[in-house]
Amino acid sequence: DAKTTQPTSMDCAEGRAANLPCNHSTISGNEYVYWYRQIHSQGPQYIIHGLKNNETNEMASLIITEDRKSSTLILPHATLRDTAVYYCIVRFPVMDSSYKLIFGSGTRLLVRP
Amino acid sequence: GAVVSQHPSRVICKSGTSVKIECRSLDFQATTMFWYRQFPKQSLMLMATSNEGSKATYEQGVEKDKFLINHASLTLSTLTVTSAHPEDSSFYICSAVQESGLSTDTQYFGPGTRLTVL
Image (cartoon, rainbow over all chains, first blue to last red; front, top):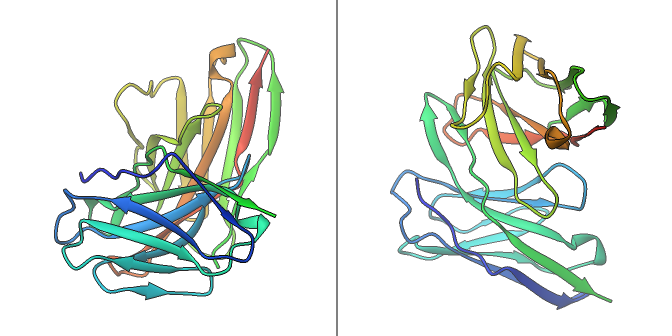
């Protein structure tokens, strides 16, 4: 299973873009990159996922490098409510269409007023 | 988006008693659910994979006789912590896979249950 490396913590100013990097240099060809975040004392919230193309949804954008060894989650206009721990996870295939996610330490993002 | 609920949100029990936590997928059916545990200032640790109609698959180091998992329907999985001790105090989180038959099925998480064993 591919492991991920993320900075322990980051901060950004409210209204600015937050760019959260993730390294997954041992990712294999059929593994997806998923991003979740966890606000204090809540369950993780799904943000976005991708394989090799850049992805965008109403929450964020995901930029994956061409060699797929790293990715960046972009929150275009960070708000105070985006303060959370952000987890970059590589999908770990188990069987059929089921899978499990192995969480690393994540990045603690602090959005400053 | 898909909604997963947990009940109760908080529970306090005496040492030696058993506690049951429910996890429900509210607007979709889930063949597969997962149970995690999270200690303060730590990341989520996967405990087991719960499959509807079959036995759960436990991660290494997780005692299956202590953490009983039942996935009796496509919308409900339960975790029972048997003979709870203070060291079992933790934040227990479940998740459910909204399966569409594609390889990109997404896992959605419940709000968590905080267990305190006195």
